Length: 300
Ligand code: AMP
Image 1: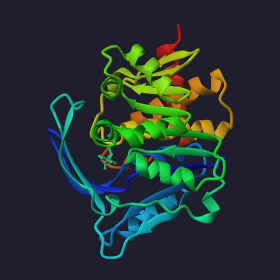
Image 2: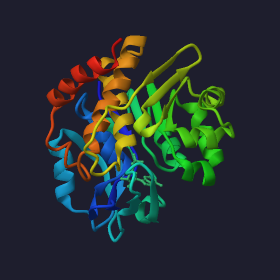
Image 3: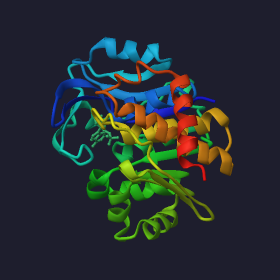
């Protein structure tokens, strides 16, 4: 089954302690869509401005991603995000966010997308997710990502969104911020009371935690030495996870655990290059090769 991905499409400028790139392809929807495309057909919904290079659309198309839902606003400017990583390559600060056309983005789902069953609402304004959901005819599984910005400035929309989704993905610090709790498990349980049936807490280099009313699964991060640019790792994790679920069309324990592992492994490739550089070099075979290594590392 295919996956519908809604989120930001960006031109990122990234500064790491040893290198920099300006105006490169990024955005939550782009990373998630690319990651998901290793597992299932993907439909993208996003917005860009006139400064958008059609070669980026071609790159998405080459990966088999349907870009019918990518709106180009005449006279508009694409969303831009600038981030700087600290020496540990884990922590970063946002230097600049220019919302531009993303600021008043009203997603318009093409007719052919409206019966999509698997939906991933990537990081973006919760109101965008709500508007996308209003245009869908009975989606089967809806998973959303969020971040501190929306917890701070759009908490009412986020609360409404949480009542309409099946799963929420967010960082450890954001789960604690959203709930006012200091413990991850307590925070996760509280989020389940807000509406989602499951929550996935991302813990960066320490892996991720899946929680539902009856289950809790933990997956470590794939140990990697080569971290060139961590941007998009969280989006890639979530995109691949939901992409794998869509490819299987079921939500049993075994499938959920494997989805968490595929999310982890796909994200481990994302950080090995700037933008989508590594994703454009690899195939599903490379991810599966890493699956075998991961099995050895984690089995006991
Ligand atoms: P991640 O590293 O997984 O947190 O994702 C980084 C990506 O999120 C970058 O490509 C940014 O363009 C995008 N991004 C950053 N801030 C926002 C925001 N407020 N809304 C939507 N996307 C964002």
